[in-house]
Length: 332
Image 1 (cartoon, rainbow, N blue to C red):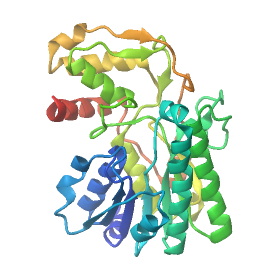
Image 2: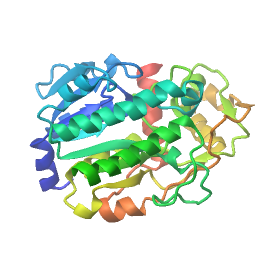
Image 3: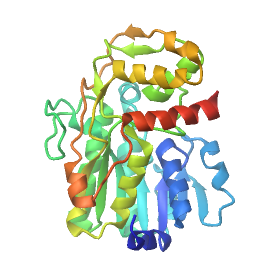
Image 4: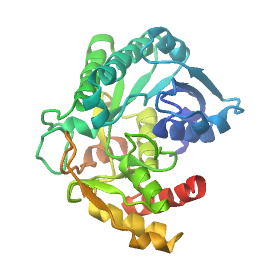
């Protein structure tokens, strides 16, 4: 960040929805470290109070326990706010297949509530978590922002609708928005528990417990795994960019390399074995492929580099080493 960008952040009041979640809590923490005033909103449906407990005594942090499905909670949260980082959502393709109605209520109706509240409050810019799932059945590799396919899950539909609403709010009301299509984000504070836990923290926890993780399919499926600090960088750039051409766009938020699940398991075993050598000998189990899963995902980050000066610092190996160390220290 340059001096001018830091000045913008220090002078701003920023709302982070989903503040107690994995990405939201990391954003809150980083923004406060940079000197921003931060408002957090969360209903703890998937977030955890422990993720933000250490922020409670910070005079620049305030928290609202509320639900984005409640328009009044959204209005309260947006009061006197300069920028919104909208992270609140019900993630997970399997969850949306099992319960499409709740996923739609949160991800579409809740998103619309936030757009309305932000627009009515005169927010300068609305930055939101979009998703790589929007690419659906597109066979293009790498994924470029203006070429998408048909969604493969209710979750993917909800995230695409977010992009349509954001575009419409600019054209109809003049609200500037930036959508960040996250690609398989991982890192500190990501929850390893629960039926819909992301693959990396889930596998780490299983390996630490000397349990055999189950890979869906033969392990050849690949993802553009993206470390949390790259995601933080993108959000800060979306807030502070002065490039008008960069606004009202969606961007792949990724590193730009893909790793197969088999390769991922190999790296996890290697890094965890530094703490516990027995982990190196644990074998994985192969299960059936999941419905709605995209076989391969790889992002082009050229657009983000060109318009936002995005410069991701953490590849899969660098990020995994940091994440594994954090999990070992905090969850073992």
